[in-house]
Length: 307
Image: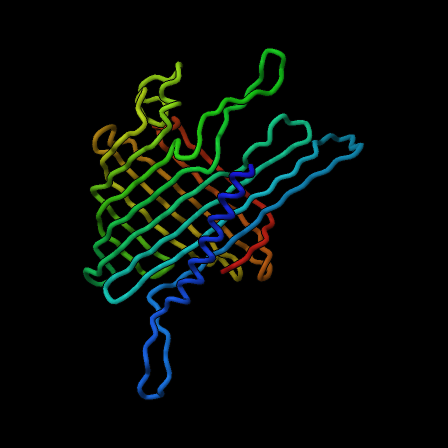
């Protein structure tokens, strides 16, 4: 838990430092008409840190219940570049949450995500640009499968870790950008690399392709396919915004008809500058990882800080 918190603090510090350095490194030009300097910067940076907190306590409560404490820290940070015909859009999404219940043997994660999206574009015509994108996804800490031993005690088995799995997806394509709130990228020649710790694929009990699609005694899987990504943010009503991201990928080399899906929805209802109600939903379909949909939902009252 300590290492996870240190990782998040380090990431937040870097985000804040980048924002400060962006302001310091602005280009300065002289206005001959007024004799004053004007600041021109091709960079725009903004971000938000949110903390969701939940606590329940029971004392002689006949209806039943178990004391618990949970917290979730999330970061959504954009730093974008635009100068003449060139654009470079970057987004970092990170979140981590823990749940501790009074009678549980182990504290458990409620969220664990790190994602970097980066796309560079050179204007082609109208709202279309030639592009090259990169997407990196992984988690911060170890993940476990929980069960019971013969005596009924709770046990856990380590199943995932940092960069196990890790996904690196990249490729050239075309980028359509209506505004900062509506973007679409198409990449017909996309490389996808899945990284895992060889420790897991060498374990007895794993067969070829059973660990996130990576073969036994291997640490990497390479794919070539078609990728498209859509980002759309809209205001549902006053102080209520919804941020949608949809990624689709199909592997040319194997089972082209099986499309990987990654959809995220983040709804924020702002109460005031620092308080909001946050809903985060993510649905993933990747038959190399699991034969069905993986879903994640986080809801709570958040403390927010924008920078």
